[in-house]
Image (cartoon, rainbow, N blue to C red; front, side, top):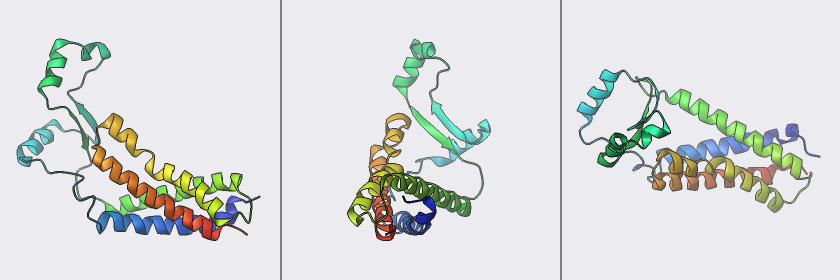
Length: 186
């Protein structure tokens, strides 16, 4: 039987590999440069939003309070006239990259531990590299790529962004699989 304690090294190596790869993906490679756009006339939009004093949250517009209200002609007219969307308001001030990177690292560690747990319950010591790679890769790809499609389906994230993030997740899953396959207890 493989214990989680026996998998601390692959957990650590997978965490480092995914962290480094994700930084390269987001800071060096060009494919995420088009993920967000600037408003064409930003100043008036910022002024209006600032006057509303919105706290950090996700806002839907137009928004109805009930399902019945969504069927009312006035609400339907708002939907048809547009714009229709969702707006994420973040806390004001400088972007805290340290906090974001710490949170991302914690997420990678948690995903690596969950992957390790599944693998430890499924594979025996000395399992062949390919068997470890297949199982860990499948679970890790689900962990890193799985949530992006529902964000496109339910929250309006552009499918182009979701597909790119899912591709990133496949890369992170394969790196995790390689680390575990290489360092699996013999």
